[in-house]
Length: 297
Image (cartoon, rainbow, N blue to C red; front, side, top):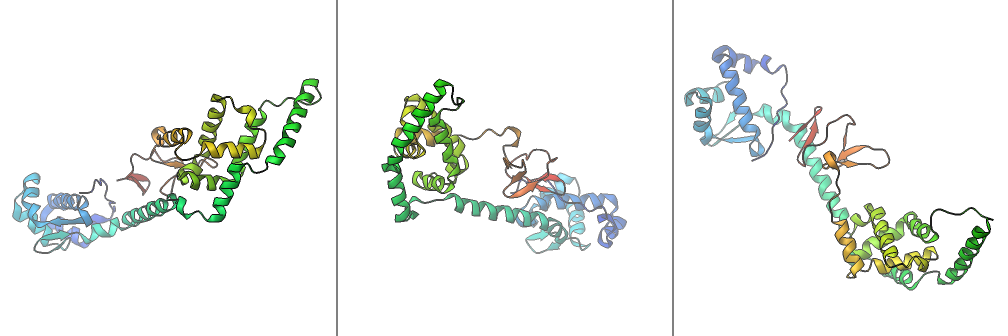
Protein backbone atom coordinates (compact mmCIF):
# COMPACT_ATOMS: atom_id res chain seq x y z
CA UNK A 1 0.00 0.00 0.00
CA UNK A 2 1.27 3.46 -0.84
CA UNK A 3 1.14 6.26 1.71
CA UNK A 4 -0.06 8.80 -0.85
CA UNK A 5 -2.52 11.53 0.12
CA UNK A 6 -3.02 13.68 -2.95
CA UNK A 7 -4.94 13.58 -6.26
CA UNK A 8 -4.70 16.43 -8.81
CA UNK A 9 -8.30 17.62 -9.24
CA UNK A 10 -9.15 19.56 -12.39
CA UNK A 11 -11.75 22.27 -11.75
CA UNK A 12 -13.49 21.35 -15.03
CA UNK A 13 -13.85 17.69 -14.00
CA UNK A 14 -17.57 18.07 -13.30
CA UNK A 15 -18.17 19.34 -16.85
CA UNK A 16 -17.05 16.19 -18.67
CA UNK A 17 -19.84 14.29 -20.42
CA UNK A 18 -19.36 11.16 -18.30
CA UNK A 19 -19.54 13.02 -15.00
CA UNK A 20 -22.45 15.19 -16.14
CA UNK A 21 -24.37 12.02 -17.05
CA UNK A 22 -23.49 10.52 -13.67
CA UNK A 23 -24.78 13.57 -11.77
CA UNK A 24 -27.94 13.79 -13.87
CA UNK A 25 -28.90 10.20 -13.04
CA UNK A 26 -27.39 9.65 -9.59
CA UNK A 27 -27.29 13.18 -8.20
CA UNK A 28 -24.42 14.60 -6.18
CA UNK A 29 -24.49 11.44 -4.12
CA UNK A 30 -23.26 9.59 -7.19
CA UNK A 31 -20.51 12.21 -7.66
CA UNK A 32 -19.40 11.71 -4.06
CA UNK A 33 -19.33 7.93 -4.52
CA UNK A 34 -17.24 8.39 -7.67
CA UNK A 35 -14.62 10.35 -5.72
CA UNK A 36 -14.66 7.83 -2.89
CA UNK A 37 -13.71 5.17 -5.45
CA UNK A 38 -10.97 7.46 -6.84
CA UNK A 39 -9.56 7.96 -3.33
CA UNK A 40 -9.47 4.21 -2.80
CA UNK A 41 -7.66 3.61 -6.11
CA UNK A 42 -5.12 6.34 -5.30
CA UNK A 43 -3.83 4.30 -2.36
CA UNK A 44 -3.39 1.08 -4.34
CA UNK A 45 -0.30 -0.19 -6.13
CA UNK A 46 -0.44 0.90 -9.79
CA UNK A 47 -3.83 2.50 -8.96
CA UNK A 48 -5.63 -0.82 -9.52
CA UNK A 49 -8.40 -1.91 -7.12
CA UNK A 50 -9.66 -5.35 -6.12
CA UNK A 51 -13.29 -6.13 -6.95
CA UNK A 52 -13.60 -8.10 -3.72
CA UNK A 53 -13.25 -4.94 -1.58
CA UNK A 54 -16.44 -3.40 -3.01
CA UNK A 55 -18.59 -4.97 -0.29
CA UNK A 56 -16.39 -3.41 2.36
CA UNK A 57 -16.42 -0.05 0.55
CA UNK A 58 -20.21 -0.14 0.30
CA UNK A 59 -20.46 -0.68 4.06
CA UNK A 60 -18.04 2.17 4.74
CA UNK A 61 -20.01 4.54 2.49
CA UNK A 62 -23.33 3.26 3.87
CA UNK A 63 -24.77 2.54 0.46
CA UNK A 64 -26.04 -0.61 -1.19
CA UNK A 65 -23.59 -2.69 -3.20
CA UNK A 66 -25.69 -2.59 -6.43
CA UNK A 67 -25.52 1.23 -6.44
CA UNK A 68 -21.75 1.17 -5.99
CA UNK A 69 -21.35 -1.34 -8.84
CA UNK A 70 -23.73 0.67 -11.06
CA UNK A 71 -21.65 3.84 -10.68
CA UNK A 72 -18.47 1.90 -11.30
CA UNK A 73 -19.73 0.04 -14.39
CA UNK A 74 -22.36 2.16 -16.18
CA UNK A 75 -20.88 5.62 -16.79
CA UNK A 76 -17.59 4.99 -18.59
CA UNK A 77 -15.56 6.29 -15.64
CA UNK A 78 -13.85 3.02 -14.72
CA UNK A 79 -12.41 0.03 -16.58
CA UNK A 80 -13.35 -3.30 -14.98
CA UNK A 81 -12.36 -6.94 -15.26
CA UNK A 82 -13.68 -9.92 -13.29
CA UNK A 83 -11.21 -9.27 -10.47
CA UNK A 84 -9.98 -5.66 -10.77
CA UNK A 85 -11.01 -2.14 -11.70
CA UNK A 86 -9.16 1.11 -12.42
CA UNK A 87 -9.73 4.71 -13.50
CA UNK A 88 -8.03 5.78 -16.76
CA UNK A 89 -8.48 9.42 -15.66
CA UNK A 90 -6.63 8.82 -12.38
CA UNK A 91 -3.72 7.19 -14.20
CA UNK A 92 -3.60 10.15 -16.61
CA UNK A 93 -3.51 12.88 -13.96
CA UNK A 94 -0.97 10.96 -11.84
CA UNK A 95 1.49 10.46 -14.72
CA UNK A 96 3.51 13.68 -14.02
CA UNK A 97 3.88 12.60 -10.39
CA UNK A 98 5.01 9.10 -11.40
CA UNK A 99 7.50 10.58 -13.89
CA UNK A 100 9.03 12.70 -11.13
CA UNK A 101 9.15 9.72 -8.80
CA UNK A 102 10.95 7.68 -11.49
CA UNK A 103 13.52 10.47 -11.97
CA UNK A 104 14.13 10.61 -8.22
CA UNK A 105 14.68 6.86 -8.01
CA UNK A 106 17.08 7.00 -10.97
CA UNK A 107 18.93 9.86 -9.26
CA UNK A 108 19.23 7.85 -6.03
CA UNK A 109 20.61 4.82 -7.91
CA UNK A 110 23.15 7.02 -9.70
CA UNK A 111 24.24 8.58 -6.41
CA UNK A 112 24.68 5.15 -4.81
CA UNK A 113 27.03 4.18 -7.64
CA UNK A 114 28.98 7.43 -7.30
CA UNK A 115 29.37 6.87 -3.56
CA UNK A 116 30.91 3.43 -4.01
CA UNK A 117 34.57 4.39 -4.46
CA UNK A 118 36.49 1.12 -4.23
CA UNK A 119 40.04 1.03 -2.88
CA UNK A 120 40.69 -1.98 -5.09
CA UNK A 121 40.20 0.24 -8.12
CA UNK A 122 43.18 2.44 -7.33
CA UNK A 123 45.84 2.10 -10.01
CA UNK A 124 49.44 1.30 -9.24
CA UNK A 125 50.32 4.85 -10.21
CA UNK A 126 48.01 6.24 -7.52
CA UNK A 127 49.33 3.71 -5.02
CA UNK A 128 52.80 5.00 -5.71
CA UNK A 129 51.56 8.52 -5.01
CA UNK A 130 50.19 7.42 -1.64
CA UNK A 131 53.46 5.71 -0.79
CA UNK A 132 55.36 8.78 -1.86
CA UNK A 133 53.23 11.01 0.37
CA UNK A 134 53.64 8.71 3.39
CA UNK A 135 57.40 8.64 2.99
CA UNK A 136 57.42 12.42 3.08
CA UNK A 137 57.29 14.08 -0.29
CA UNK A 138 59.52 17.14 -0.32
CA UNK A 139 61.36 16.39 2.90
CA UNK A 140 64.35 18.20 1.47
CA UNK A 141 62.26 21.35 1.34
CA UNK A 142 61.24 20.88 4.93
CA UNK A 143 64.64 21.98 6.30
CA UNK A 144 64.61 25.10 4.16
CA UNK A 145 61.04 25.87 5.22
CA UNK A 146 62.01 25.37 8.87
CA UNK A 147 64.71 28.02 8.41
CA UNK A 148 62.26 30.36 6.72
CA UNK A 149 59.72 29.87 9.49
CA UNK A 150 62.38 30.44 12.14
CA UNK A 151 63.57 33.56 10.35
CA UNK A 152 60.05 34.93 10.13
CA UNK A 153 59.52 34.35 13.84
CA UNK A 154 62.71 36.22 14.61
CA UNK A 155 61.59 39.13 12.45
CA UNK A 156 58.22 39.12 14.16
CA UNK A 157 59.92 39.33 17.52
CA UNK A 158 61.97 42.26 16.28
CA UNK A 159 58.85 44.01 14.99
CA UNK A 160 60.01 43.92 11.35
CA UNK A 161 57.01 41.89 10.10
CA UNK A 162 53.36 41.79 11.23
CA UNK A 163 52.52 38.77 13.40
CA UNK A 164 50.14 36.22 11.83
CA UNK A 165 47.16 35.28 13.96
CA UNK A 166 47.05 31.78 12.40
CA UNK A 167 49.92 29.44 13.39
CA UNK A 168 52.06 28.30 10.48
CA UNK A 169 51.24 24.61 11.00
CA UNK A 170 47.51 25.37 10.79
CA UNK A 171 47.98 27.32 7.55
CA UNK A 172 49.80 24.33 6.06
CA UNK A 173 46.89 22.07 7.04
CA UNK A 174 44.33 24.52 5.60
CA UNK A 175 46.19 24.51 2.27
CA UNK A 176 45.20 20.85 1.86
CA UNK A 177 41.70 22.05 0.94
CA UNK A 178 43.07 23.36 -2.36
CA UNK A 179 44.37 20.00 -3.65
CA UNK A 180 41.25 18.27 -4.96
CA UNK A 181 43.04 15.33 -6.61
CA UNK A 182 44.93 14.62 -3.38
CA UNK A 183 41.68 14.80 -1.38
CA UNK A 184 40.03 12.27 -3.72
CA UNK A 185 43.07 10.03 -3.40
CA UNK A 186 42.83 10.16 0.39
CA UNK A 187 39.10 9.38 0.13
CA UNK A 188 39.83 6.22 -1.87
CA UNK A 189 42.65 5.26 0.47
CA UNK A 190 40.33 5.56 3.47
CA UNK A 191 37.47 3.67 1.82
CA UNK A 192 35.04 6.37 2.97
CA UNK A 193 34.37 7.52 -0.58
CA UNK A 194 32.26 10.57 -1.28
CA UNK A 195 31.39 11.18 2.37
CA UNK A 196 35.08 11.92 2.97
CA UNK A 197 35.20 14.43 0.09
CA UNK A 198 31.91 16.15 0.91
CA UNK A 199 32.80 16.57 4.60
CA UNK A 200 36.51 17.28 4.17
CA UNK A 201 36.24 20.45 6.27
CA UNK A 202 35.07 18.27 9.15
CA UNK A 203 37.91 15.82 8.47
CA UNK A 204 40.47 18.65 8.66
CA UNK A 205 38.92 19.93 11.87
CA UNK A 206 39.30 16.47 13.45
CA UNK A 207 42.88 16.28 12.17
CA UNK A 208 43.73 19.65 13.75
CA UNK A 209 42.18 18.56 17.05
CA UNK A 210 44.29 15.40 16.97
CA UNK A 211 47.50 17.35 16.29
CA UNK A 212 46.77 19.68 19.20
CA UNK A 213 45.78 16.83 21.55
CA UNK A 214 49.20 15.19 21.15
CA UNK A 215 51.06 18.55 21.04
CA UNK A 216 52.65 17.85 17.66
CA UNK A 217 52.10 21.29 16.12
CA UNK A 218 55.85 21.81 15.89
CA UNK A 219 56.16 18.68 13.72
CA UNK A 220 54.21 20.25 10.84
CA UNK A 221 56.66 22.71 9.32
CA UNK A 222 55.62 22.52 5.65
CA UNK A 223 52.70 21.49 3.43
CA UNK A 224 54.45 18.20 2.64
CA UNK A 225 54.82 17.49 6.38
CA UNK A 226 51.09 18.20 6.80
CA UNK A 227 50.33 15.65 4.08
CA UNK A 228 52.66 13.06 5.57
CA UNK A 229 51.19 13.45 9.05
CA UNK A 230 47.66 13.34 7.63
CA UNK A 231 48.39 10.03 5.86
CA UNK A 232 49.19 8.41 9.22
CA UNK A 233 46.07 10.01 10.74
CA UNK A 234 44.00 8.57 7.86
CA UNK A 235 45.43 5.02 7.98
CA UNK A 236 42.57 2.45 8.05
CA UNK A 237 42.61 0.43 11.25
CA UNK A 238 44.35 3.07 13.36
CA UNK A 239 42.77 4.61 16.45
CA UNK A 240 42.60 8.03 14.79
CA UNK A 241 40.92 6.53 11.72
CA UNK A 242 38.31 4.74 13.84
CA UNK A 243 37.45 8.02 15.51
CA UNK A 244 37.25 9.73 12.11
CA UNK A 245 34.80 7.11 10.83
CA UNK A 246 32.71 7.41 13.99
CA UNK A 247 32.44 11.18 13.59
CA UNK A 248 31.59 11.08 9.87
CA UNK A 249 28.85 8.52 10.48
CA UNK A 250 27.04 10.84 12.87
CA UNK A 251 23.98 12.39 11.19
CA UNK A 252 24.19 16.06 10.27
CA UNK A 253 21.58 18.08 12.15
CA UNK A 254 19.74 20.13 9.50
CA UNK A 255 16.83 21.06 11.74
CA UNK A 256 13.53 21.37 9.90
CA UNK A 257 15.37 21.03 6.55
CA UNK A 258 16.75 17.57 7.37
CA UNK A 259 15.13 16.00 4.29
CA UNK A 260 16.74 18.48 1.87
CA UNK A 261 20.13 19.39 0.46
CA UNK A 262 21.44 22.95 0.36
CA UNK A 263 24.16 24.35 -1.89
CA UNK A 264 26.64 26.03 0.48
CA UNK A 265 27.57 28.62 -2.17
CA UNK A 266 24.20 29.67 -3.59
CA UNK A 267 21.87 28.53 -0.81
CA UNK A 268 19.76 26.69 -3.40
CA UNK A 269 17.53 24.03 -1.82
CA UNK A 270 17.00 20.65 -3.50
CA UNK A 271 16.23 16.98 -2.93
CA UNK A 272 17.47 14.09 -5.07
CA UNK A 273 18.60 16.62 -7.69
CA UNK A 274 15.19 18.35 -7.87
CA UNK A 275 15.28 22.11 -7.18
CA UNK A 276 12.99 23.40 -4.39
CA UNK A 277 11.59 26.96 -4.64
CA UNK A 278 13.10 29.27 -2.03
CA UNK A 279 9.67 30.09 -0.55
CA UNK A 280 8.56 26.44 -0.29
CA UNK A 281 7.96 25.04 3.21
CA UNK A 282 10.50 22.45 4.48
CA UNK A 283 10.24 19.00 2.90
CA UNK A 284 8.14 17.02 5.41
CA UNK A 285 9.63 13.54 4.87
CA UNK A 286 11.79 11.41 2.55
CA UNK A 287 8.83 10.39 0.37
CA UNK A 288 7.53 13.91 -0.28
CA UNK A 289 7.59 15.22 -3.87
CA UNK A 290 7.18 18.89 -4.86
CA UNK A 291 4.32 19.01 -7.36
CA UNK A 292 1.84 21.75 -8.37
CA UNK A 293 3.15 24.15 -5.71
CA UNK A 294 2.87 21.81 -2.73
CA UNK A 295 4.42 18.75 -1.10
CA UNK A 296 2.63 15.50 -1.85
CA UNK A 297 3.44 12.01 -0.65
